[in-house]
Image 1 (tube, rainbow, N blue to C red):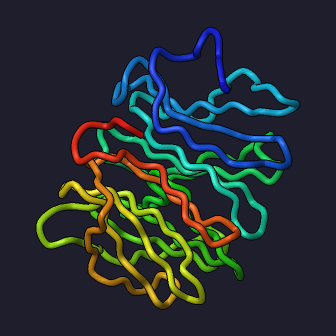
Image 2 (cartoon, rainbow, N blue to C red; image 1 turned 90 degrees about the vertical axis):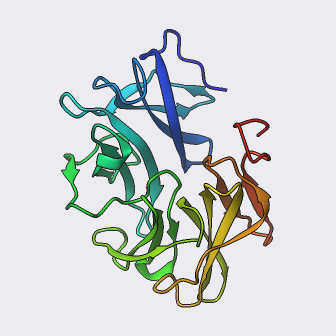
Length: 240
């Protein structure tokens, strides 16, 4: 359980968490007076020794809100922190920092080139040999790195015939096969498949799980089972 008293901001949203080591977690979120307000910054807190430390500011852009932080560790051990900034999600620019000491210190902020966004909400899939496959938006795109996240190529867009999908979550299916699961505007979670480690993707299709156009997350466990967090409804955002 995480409790900050007092909280550093009136509202907070879109949390991300990464395991630093046994019993050590690092979380981040965006917070301010309200989503989309120019005072919204990225905040972070560390859990160590069985307790959460006070939140600290991790990123702020002058006079413009920040959005959707994502923390993840690449295959070479580097800890990455991606976030977005701009007046609205349709006008986002991406930025990132990295840490080589498990989040105690961070590199200067790097603003990414136009059209490159990095992971939008869910963690990317880090595979062997420096390969990272990341879901991004708007519309569903895949960004792919072969050098542990230093550089990226874009693949897509992947779409459905009569609606929109965003925020794909990529999971391994065995061998070079990958699948992504995405939120949609058609009331059901949609999937797409790749047989070449994320270079090309099938047309997306709905599955039997409902979705109210809300974020989902999914992991594959070591025993092969998949665990998904989502809203089991086609409208509203409850139940979880």
